[in-house]
Length: 217
Image (cartoon, rainbow, N blue to C red; front, side, top):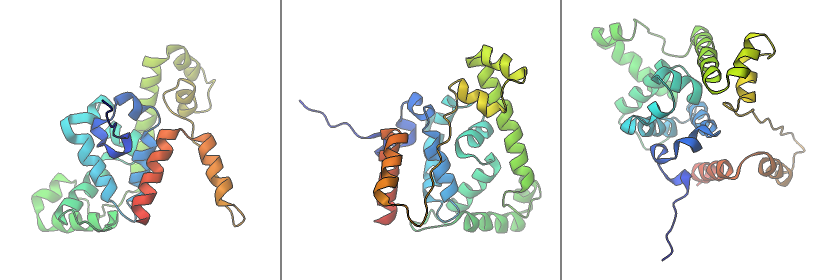
């Protein structure tokens, strides 16, 4: 009997094989986090999924490390957006991260206990310091991963043979190299699609197409 296999992009993230998540699929997490500026629904759904059965613990030692490596944002910012989204009633319409943060900010000012718990912050937008901390801790985490997975590359990194921790991580196979694409006024859709097809893996492309279809539908 033929069995229908559900494509990965249709499954909750916590049902994906861990190796497939690690194998470059973190880009999908980053896309959802970056899209939160205009609509944070997919980000919040993703947060809920990775917290199911503590799935994120299979990918990082701490929640902070997971948020930094996979979402590209400090855990505190991710927490605030998710909390604000819930306070808004998890609306089924485009909701910006700014709207979610504003709700949390109002709640923090109204509840002194909540305000103390959040470190007396009244501006919940990420600050430059947040990104500096994220980059510093992210580099330390990558260095630890390199030391465990590829000691010889770690030694070369310490000896200054790599321009950055990320470069060493790419050489060690821990991080996928970033792909860049240029789009101009004369770029033809067919040619651009060809670039994507040649340089990105099929599973990732299927996920991107599914997200675009849902957004345009």
